[in-house]
Length: 129
Image (cartoon, rainbow, N blue to C red):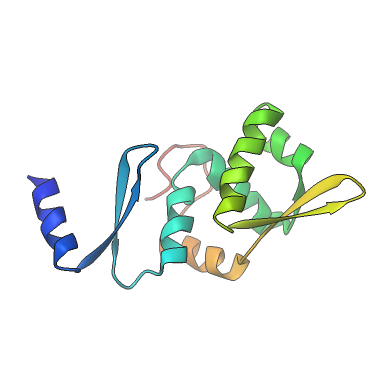
């Protein structure tokens, strides 16, 4: 029943829908939210990518090794998550003496979204109140 009404709202252009075919999930947003914000919010819903984003917001930058320790995953898994964030231009990477340093692409937008949607940096899988 819910999916029926969500489809009607989508067809009437009253909401925006972000579909991820890889994970077979759909996220629904107000029309007032930009495409960039929709993508960032999607990644803030995941505990691991939220940890990476929050760390980069707090620390301004982090190395690959620091992020691997932070999320407590092996380097290949860390690389996979970072690649996803890089592909959507949420973070940027710079190399300095063969060390990869990561930054948030647009920290002001991320900070605004965190305040606006009351996202917390806890280990819980549910980032929203």
